[in-house]
Image 1 (cartoon, one colour):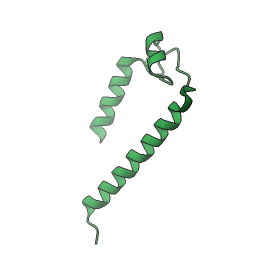
Image 2 (image 1 turned 120 degrees about the vertical axis):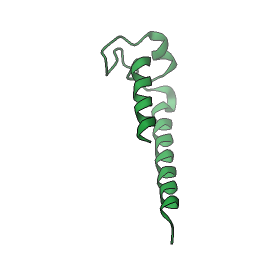
Image 3 (image 1 turned 180 degrees about the horizontal axis):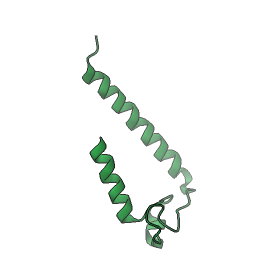
Image 4 (image 1 turned 135 degrees about the vertical axis):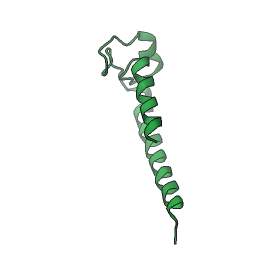
Length: 74
């Protein structure tokens, strides 16, 4: 019988694989269009960030906050 830790590891692997596949699909051909304004705070997203991170939706500060929240939930 598989224990709960093995099941959790399998689920984590599945989520990681899905996230990587989604990221690859978003960046395929670099066709993703970046937002001009942050979806969180409404501030303009600098052109350098828009070019460096195709498809970005948030400014650097809001992206860092979002990533911090995700790490806390993991």
